[in-house]
Image (cartoon, one colour):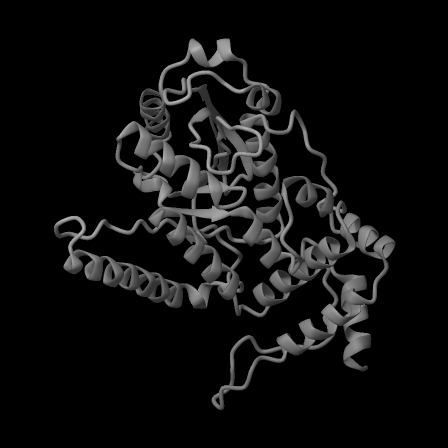
Length: 355
């Protein structure tokens, strides 16, 4: 029997429970003394080729038969079925343990901030602070934190801002300022023993929530930047890497998964819930959510202002900061499939924070 025929037979006879799985041929789980790769990988390659030739209807039927999610685009369905067989085969050959989560929980955060139409240099202040807690093991939303914040620098919301976010002037006027809300949010985190008994990570839709909104707000409020916000998971990068597709926005990711946006767009809490849906689906599809972005803040150079020495040190400081970023990126290279893109993104963060 050829590899393709074996793969087709394997797909047709695979059983989720594993007890009735038809044995095409016996494989040893260990490498031999010469270090040869286990033939199970050749079999997986043949299975992947067979999956690539399946129609959308065939993919949906097979996923339904295996009691797996049959929603999503063809690329998503192929990835899901391939991951299923990969985990089953490697576990059966005792090569790789079941996928385990790096973190016990993830907190999905999507801030809403003050804004002005067509003003890209506007100083944003956070006016909505949502946090959705997802259990990575049970793959479900277990709790939420949600409060509004009173802006100080620009206390009057623009008409554009209220229209975009659905947040009224009266709502922010009766709310506390950001530092008090942040304290309560961190108390909420403590109540779930996050960072004490349970590991966790922040999940965002893009880099802006942590690198721009939170950083700008902490500077305005003259409070330390929270340690938990210095590294986070950009769901867009994880999604494009896991499903081998282009970068997508929130709505595009949902559509590609066969899901619908629930709630009102640009409502921070609703956006966070929908991002959480994507995170849960990624976990269901065998993706381990790991931090892939971090915030680097360049320290101001020492020395008297305006001196030649100070100018030289300032240039050296910028060079060192750039070199530090490159070194840290090099350390992340083994974990990232989008090294070049992340390199460009993080250098852009450095430029943003330096400004």
